[in-house]
Length: 115
Length: 111
Picture (cartoon, rainbow over the protein chains, first blue to last red):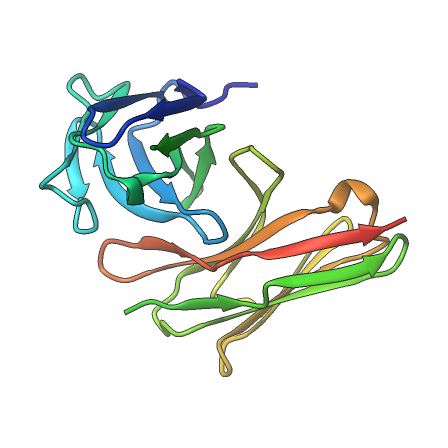
């Protein structure tokens, strides 16, 4: 069964350093999402892509976060510089629409710890 | 804006039924979802319900939707130890059809 791939699975970094996360969605899925999940909370949408275009990045802290999906396939989320409060799980999801129903499929996530 | 709330914790004995509750605020919801998250893993879609339905059954899972009260519940029949996880409800609403997640309910199944 096709899955959303993410790497790395774990990342430890020091504050003020740059980090990058990669996501490869399920083949053929045009919509890709990045979520941040702080421990004990539900996922919060950071950015949504439709193909290579950003549909919604209203919750993305643009002073330090950036996301791209240049060819409309895989995507990279970058944080520069990282801050202590960025420690969280970063989840990528992709979605397909079948019979009018959109279903999101999540990757395993990248757990980030900022020291 | 959208707000989705859940109780934090539920403990049940193996073989009993579990009922996890969720309330939401956006009356323009189109779909409501239940996801399961096991430790260290991503979210797995369990089931969903259209906002114009009031009940959906899928094997051991029953979803009830009270649109008037904006209340959603997930019933798991014959709960097993493998059902221990965090369960998130989510609603899809608004102009961008954004999905908003609740805070999650941790289900503990006691053998």
